[in-house]
Image 1 (tube, rainbow, N blue to C red):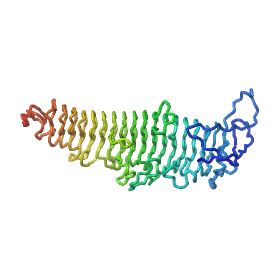
Image 2 (cartoon, helix red, strand yellow):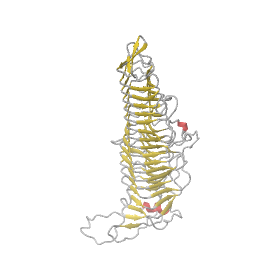
Image 3 (cartoon, rainbow, N blue to C red):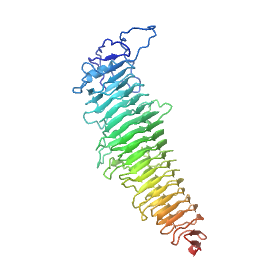
Image 4 (cartoon, rainbow, N blue to C red):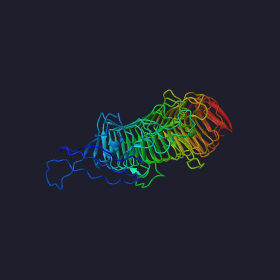
Length: 589
């Protein structure tokens, strides 16, 4: 329970254009009960009489100017050398609704209990509220009335280690709508700024803040513990119609924190969902650094945009969408620095990569992002299928993902797959610039496993050697279109394996490749047309009877194999004809 008992203290009341009035002395009262955070707090005490001034106009219609108060008085030590909790709590209890509270620049005020703001106030200043204890499992500032704001103040934690169970150690906890948190510095908490999962609260703006040295509760490197997935966030929005803009967020070095900026839905907590339930959040222009498992994550939300952010040092995912609807990740930069030793949260078995589209994400746009691989990544961008929570074994993959115009570049690290599609439905992968590093197995520029109705077009893919990997690899029955891609320095430019739904492979270019096209086991009706394979070996391996080779160019010198009688291939001055299963050639002059 928050401590809100009143004791002796004073407040300096200031009014614009008025002489100072008498200093009110708060009267002692019994400890107030904790309010239901979902309901507005009881009405605040009446404002004190206005300071004497020369009245003008009708006294009955005169507007009362807003009150501005400086946090000072008996029992409040502005140096932070002594704890001022009792006086500070009594002081705040006497503040009238609508007032402005100022923490003066240079002041450091130490407290060891939650400051509960239970009326509409504006807390501002350049001073510091230093929490030295008492909030290990509680919020430091708790805002429970709509329309409040906190600007400019520094809120720091210098107390015992935060609790890993129960309520969270949080710098600013928001239990209301239409709240503004702007220009605040938060330092050393387990959780920085959080819109709480009880509402649903809307209209919250968190902007221009420094949320520093977030301390997670995970086990860190080498730990098999599953801890750390219920706390350790920089900024969290459980709600709707909110904006998180222009903040600097960091995790403390050596910690195992959860999410830098986190927006999540409220299926288990929503009380009054409102018209925009679990939707309409903007995350823009933020910088997130340090060992968060996920730098920015959107979970279960709809109609949300993540744009113009720069993130670095994540140990799971730089940007992630999880079970979302109509979410866009646009024009972000991901600096991927994870090392092989960064196995935080290994009990959860994450595939670690800069951008993750996880499970039942529908209608996701991933566009115009720049990813630089400086560390170890499983893939640059991954759409990963998984079973839903709750014990079901049915694996669900993303649907209608548009992955376009992104850059995946190697900056000294390793990344064997540029874009991975795991059991996705109707994905479009187009216009990306992808580089991959050397590895064995089913790796390459775009790798599709059991996806269906996929389109892979107009990508530029560069591998590491002609002895390894694929430019585009599709495995499974689902149909696919592979069109207009330029592929360099891989073993097989395009491979479509065991596809019964049919493949359309048109206008691709493979250079410095061992093989141009491999359609092993692809028995569905397919079209291969107008491709240019500059291959060292067979241009088309494992050609199938149901494939139509309309004007297909064979750019290799080796004898093709596969296909059916009557197929014709032309290239490098030779005409190849499949005669009853045997390829025969003639030199063209």
